[in-house]
Image 1 (cartoon, rainbow, N blue to C red):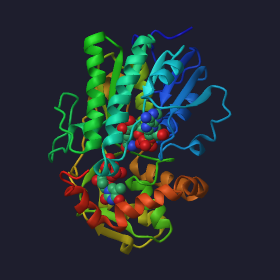
Image 2 (image 1 turned 30 degrees about the vertical axis):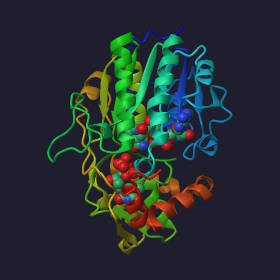
Image 3 (image 1 turned 90 degrees about the horizontal axis):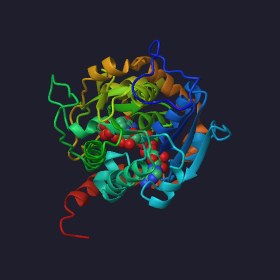
Image 4 (image 1 turned 45 degrees about the vertical axis):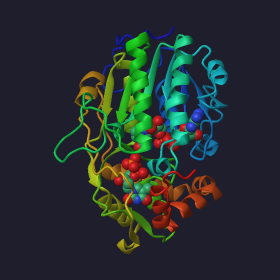
Length: 370
Ligand code: NAD
Ligand code: TYD
């Protein structure tokens, strides 16, 4: 029997474990950081759900990330692009619900070149929305970000009603996806639910992002780049708390609604970096201040009251426990790190950091050149 998705599922507590219903889920971007963790979460929580995982395997998607679920009969991997209409139509056959993660996800890369961001995050999402609507999908969760709101003034937290003011090409492309999804509900009554989550950390995050970058470099005794004064504030959420929020949105969210998913863990970057160095037993002298990211948002902060009230969701993992667990994971998964930081990663790192000043000068002065 398939679930009705009308908010009638009655969960006894904050646990969403379900053994009764069968459901065919399409997860996009499931070979990446959050998507792969979500697949693990769903396979464990919902014993009769099956998942089709559509992923293009860009630099940040890796089959090695999925090795523990590769043989699970309820998970099928399909390599493909969310912007490939025919492929998307094919994988949507028989699918009840979509959870859409696939994206270009790194702000620094979007500053170097935003082409892939617009292609995947905006046009790819539009292709997926159209095909899902045609296929009669009953629920579509768009995995969005708090970065669409821009930088939060001190003392304020963004609610779902705050106007969008994205500052990076990445955030602008995610705002495009988010607004398209909203429009598909308003125009076609397509059953979309939008989530906007804060900065995630945890296992399987590609080491270009701040926390895994610090861990993987510090372990090798290499310097840790801190942008500007390092006092930018992020609200860090453990990826499993995000997955629980997405699961709750999928099952309990109201169609056409937006849910902020924050953790209330606001920390300056410098404090995070120092704590990680302590956990690994490395000196603070590894911290290296480098030129700031252009358009760098000073602070992200979310009000998640709506998700707590309507989805009965609340983050469970403290930052201290989560950081310890994450550091341990990276220390015990050297083989995964080696595989995902092959040549392409090293050349990206050299471009982004070793020649940072000249690289940024070139990007910022690239007027009229092509
Ligand atoms: P990630 O870069 O680790 O993973 C992205 C995945 O999408 C990769 O497996 C990649 O191969 C795949 N992909 C990229 N382009 C594709 C395409 N055209 N077709 C199919 N697959 C494609 O990113 P992540 O950190 O796991 O983020 C997942 C989603 O969550 C994104 O939509 C991101 O905007 C959102 N999000 C991330 C965070 C965060 O802190 N990481 C916070 C809030 C929201
Ligand atoms: P990041 O992980 O790229 O996430 P986002 O830009 O989406 O918030 O960066 C998190 C914070 O860490 C952000 O304020 C930028 C900062 N940062 C550094 O200081 N040094 C780095 O090398 C990176 C990658 C990020």
